[in-house]
Image 1: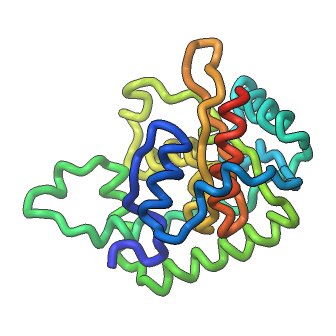
Image 2: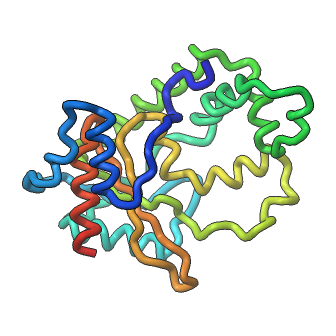
Image 3: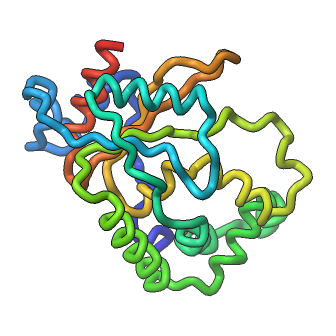
Length: 232
């Protein structure tokens, strides 16, 4: 069992939100994702997340987050998200450590992947599950009464090609972790989350804004994304 808590999934890739909704209705007979498009938008408690102990948010990306929040009529800050890289390492490391390799393939792995596999050698499924359960409890306490949290998808512009080439496997992992600071925690909690394109930086690079909901609010979140994009 490579993934003890279900943070990896197989699913469709869609060009539009409505395409994704249509596919979900096919994959989950009896679901009502499509019906949510015609339902009135509920009054939502929206919170803004732009603070992480792992990374500072680029001003242009932060402005995009604020713009989405303004369109939803709420700009209250929820404060820094709890947790640290150590919360995610045991789960990811266990997954990678248990992926079988053909003879000789190990030398072809990236240094960060080799480091993670080594970290996961002694992590059991129960260990990984306990890490995830603690993260879920911390997230629930921090989340409070929010219905939707608006956050960056990636907080900084992408690194330049070769920027991490001189780093060790462990250092590469930690450098790359800053780019997942606002997404990886929700992989652990299992909450529905999606990213929408929201403009570009002054350098012409695309900006993504993330919408995160409570558990089992997938349909509402998809409908909200569709309405935001149709009015952008």
